[in-house]
Amino acid sequence: MQSEIINEILSVEDDADKIVDDAQKKASGIVSDAEAKAAALVKDALKKEREKNQAALKILMNDNAEKLAAYQKELEKQIVDEPDLINKLSGELADKICNSSVY
Image (cartoon, rainbow, N blue to C red; front, side, top):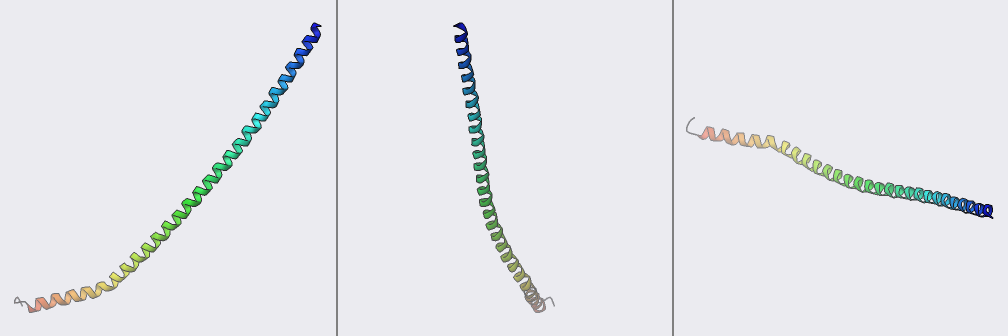
């Protein structure tokens, strides 16, 4: 009778060990799945953020290119107008010197 009880106890222990092993395998699978899902979510979030930042950067670069083009156009206009202004001012200065009582 003792041997039957011992066999029963050993059988129950074996069953308990199998249950624990199965639970550990399932838990490991659940953790692995959760890690994979979390990695996919992070990757997706990073991709969306990168796309958003690239779009914002593109807008800023276009705005800056437009501002630069406008500035260059204004600068070119000033450079073209500068000789006329110099001639005008030098003419007025020459007239004042010639009309002064010093000469």
